[in-house]
Amino acid sequence: MSTRFTMPPVGAASSVVFPTIHRHALGNGMRAWFIPHAGVPAVTISMVMDGGVAADPPQRPGLVSLVSSLVTEGAGGRDAIAMADAVARIGGHLAVESGADVSTVTMTTLAEHFEAGLRLMADVVQRPMFLEPDFQRTRDLRRSRLIQSSNSPAAIADRAILGAVFGDHPYGHGAFGTTRSLEAMSVDDLRDHWAHAWGPARATLLVSGDVNATRVEAAAEDSFGAWASEARPPARLLVPEVGAERRILVVQRPGAPQSELRVGHHGPPRRTPDYHALLTLNALLGGQFTSRLNRNLRETRAITYGVRSGFEMRRVGGLFSCDTSVQADATADAVSEILRECAAVLADGQIQADELASAKASLTRGYVRHFETAAHLVRAMATLVTHDLDPDAFDRFVSAVESLDASDLTRAAQGAIRPDEAAVIVVGDIDRLGPSLQSLGRTVAPIQVEF
Image (tube, rainbow, N blue to C red; front, side):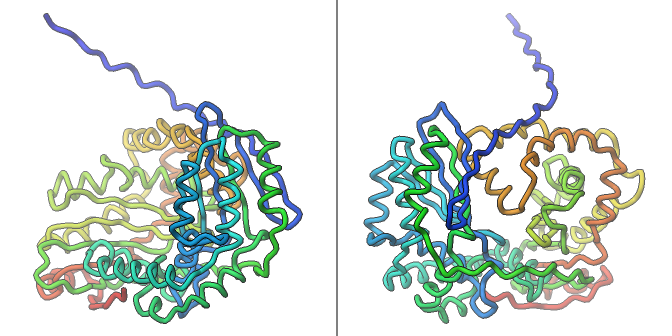
């Protein structure tokens, strides 16, 4: 007996109708946004604070992220253990994230404990304790993480490409800073930064879950209505200078059997009018398993397990990069092919109909899954807040992508992909790789990466 299985036909991509955001403004300048989401008796709460890693003082990289971590360690008269116990008692989960442009504290808890969760959130953002033992412990953990990262080729390459592309711009370093900057910090540095950077005028409260707007507004007023602060508006970030970085920068790892590679340059901000075209272009170039870069380096040349490209779009600029790890003797070939594939998408008539259709489908077919849960909706609202996007940004996504043609992608590529200006980072054995890298016609220079 045989059974025949027929795959169901693929339907059209579902458009997104993003829910209406209930907006409320407190007298102290704090905003509160809410989207109801019934069905699961839970609620997700985020406080988005304007000012992220890019707000680190020049001599204190890592400060903003450390402040964000310490506010959740002890607050409102509770030390770290008491705070963890209070969160656990309401079935909650508390997390913190420091991005380039904003810092975010998020809690998920049961809907019946919404007000209790919001009061804990209010303690975290308004009444952190910055206790010396918590500071010392958290700083020691970070130093250990930095030591571990200094032995990771991928972490080294990630840090090196930021420095090569952004230089001294505030986007030019990661969240954890360096061991040297951590050792120079004191708990008073954290207290001072918090006092001048965390305040209601910088804050947006985001809520989604099985509660209603009246309840959210009342709880927000109760927990945050009296919040006052000395916080100043964040400093205005300048657009990063775009330069031609044609060097191949090598971080020496003697005897390394593989080379970790990053090829990248300045990219556009999130509010670029070419946003949809660039996402689709990247899906075609290196954003999915069937993309050009992966087919070339993995399937045709068999020199890597995988390669990807991506646009990291921030408020006033961004990064375009291609990332992979290849066998050492194929390093120069991999760099050459990455640059060649990036150059190929700049030429008119080089984007084929079938790969364009595949790229579009990879973005649109599952787009609705990004808005299924309360946590998804809060993260989407955080994106709107961070980049000051129009309320219908998500509604327009599917139609905007589906309306693109090959010429749209080529035009966007010509404005945003610049292989001749790209920095190339190699974490590998320069003694072994030097001659082959020099054959690429670029200056090859050793560099040190600080952790």
